[in-house]
Length: 491
Image 1 (tube, rainbow, N blue to C red):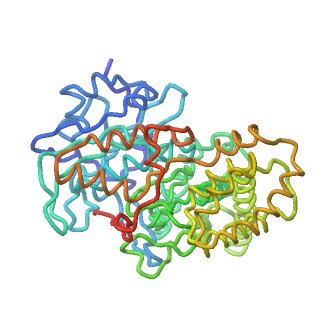
Image 2 (spheres, rainbow, N blue to C red):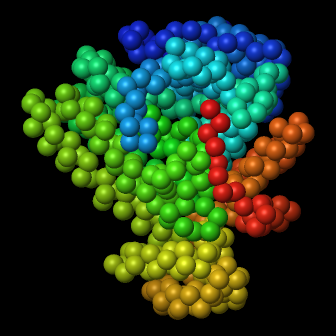
Image 3 (tube, one colour):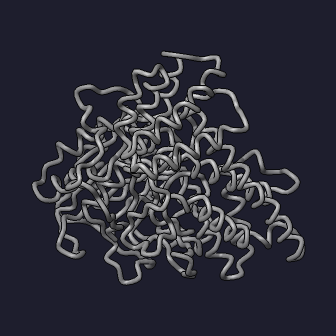
């Protein structure tokens, strides 16, 4: 029996969906980190993965039995401009496995060398972006947000040239699939309706098998993707996450967060916050993410038009109806989440305004997003928690004015005291991958070959909702000299 029980469905699609090629070998691979828990969940042997054969596979120096390595083709709108051919320019899909819960999972190398889609790029990844994606994607998983996962990070023993020469690395990424809005666009641009249909059938079989055999499966697929993305972006906002590069080629039809490049988390709450150095006009700012998600989904609907109905007018009408569900679905997920963050368990018409007024007070008062909601749980247990809340606002009276209204609303709720505090702590994390912490572990690794800070940060982020007294300082916002103003893709 092979060490990796590959069962590759995407590789059985027509050849125009991808280019078949092995990863490029590296000089001196060294395992930085293996996600043993994820390996076990995938039904893989961590001992084998950490051994010589496993390291060869994880670095690109060997192709495991049953693997059918390929680089997928896709297109995409990048910052609003259509690029007809993108594709995996530095990634190789090794294959698929069925995990212990019966779910199909891709195993992909990122930073594995050039492919036909590299567009003059070197196909490699620097160590910093690999550590960022590993830490942030695993943090998102621990926060309960759908995401790709990190199985391993490997040093290559080679340097990659960016603004300077940097250590090279390879990330092994696990996903429900790597099929994107841009994958559908790739075939729609080419007028390849046969490929569109094959791709849609593949996605239905993989992600929405209940839709197969229904009267209008492709309409139902569009609605399913819309619903998944509305829920996902709402969950991003509820933890202060900014993706940073929401191009259509970075939007997964599986509803997972994918392609962590210049991503960041809010410190002080600001809906206009932008960290990505390449987002010079704020297109993908924190508060713009729902609007951009709908824009991207509209591009998906356009790509699917030939499958939605006979005739353009009828297909457009179907698409518009499906897209019209995004707003209510997002609002329900977002406002429901805010209600839980405020300790409210029943619904009142005024709750949305109450939450919005707190967010506005936080914006005006430069209050830290994560700490405000975490400390709110203590304030909900009684007025003794107000002092720590007031300290977060430049003008504490803004909190005072809001807190009176909030407490009157809490009085209408059946739960109180410790029960409410415990419930709020289950949805308001104490620990997030703060930008300055990510930069610090990257600096330690790149400059000193020291991965102990990275390992410790991963341990903290694995339990984001739990109190961790010995590591409480990981919850602190950055000092002025630690503040991160720009993040970078690293490609």
